[in-house]
Length: 554
Image (cartoon, rainbow, N blue to C red; front, side, top):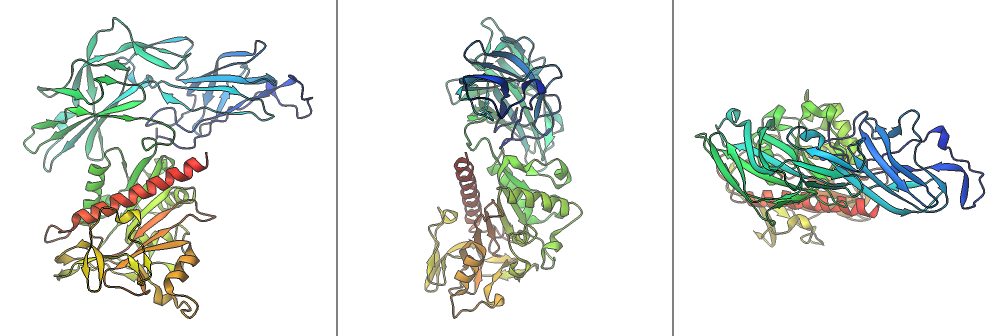
């Protein structure tokens, strides 16, 4: 099951017994009840989407004894719900407002549901929604904003170089209470007053070269929490009043050293599972092209991503048929290969194929934001954001050589357009480059000359009308953010922001300068922190823009 965080519509189909008659008189009482449709913008559980026959209980109250109690709806894999045969769906029977509550998972024991997180943890992801005083309309739709009633514990085990994780797949968490109740009327989950703390034996699974565990926890105060890793026990402290709170997840990070000893991060921080379009609801993604090409620069960027965004997701090309990209606000595609020829079709491999490219195109078209780096800037063509004759045309893929130069970015384009205030440059310092300043990205040593950027002169714009920069920006609804450090005219562009268009709702930042090299081969790059900071800035900027768009649409 894959997570579906964003814009999931749950249309509760009507039964014939509850059909709408468009010709009824607009009196308070309706001669023909009108079916209510429901929608939500979060999935049933963090980490999963709706499946066939997932069941939700919905109740409704109105005036004049209009009451529905614990009506059971069943889902399909697309998130659409129908009532079971013979069950009457919820309807407006008059023109007065109604109030609704909904919860998952459904229980015949409406009211109070017993909870035991040791015996059936996977069934304990309780979510609850309420919508008060919804007015009548001819086609009533209720937006159910679900909230998580449980807390979540996450354990992540990482290995240093050469360390094995095989003996760390089983651990024990002590100090938690596991017996409690969930109340369907108010969505509250709580431990029983006399519940004892019990040991919780857990099994971790391999995910992207790590071991991970996620489990649901009843909200509760904690006095003594520990985790047993092999033969050693480690105490865990909190940063937030020593308690697990509903709607938050808490993480324990374990590092396995090369000598098989472990380090345990002993303070865990609560982060919201869900909220109104906050950063915990949408994820940052990284396309794992390195898994099929084994390039040092892509391996370096992937390693940094996993450390920088521990709850981002590295998307395996081998699992692309199961991708659910709608849960991501930003997806980063970094392709940097020695020896390939120019042209987006040369990026394809047995795994990075047309199906993957079409899935990413669909994501981008529907509003997902992209960070395209190095040779990946060419993907703007199959994504139909650029015509083929406007593809990056200043291209390199050689092994490179050693020189003493500092390569970087000039953000004052054509000595006319100062783009230094763009968020991508926040926190970066400048150095001198002749008569102007630049942002350095890579220092003295071996450099791979892997440009994949734009030579505007080849487009033969009429410069008597306007300069190359204005031609390209206006023609493509784009903003030139940077060029090579030594370029002071309108000839080329190395970093471009592509704004949304009428046909493509997503935003893209394309970084195509060779100075953006993630792993300098012979030395530690003096300006590696600039590579990382620029990437972090770009992702944050795209993430912020995604939320601006989503909130403006809601």
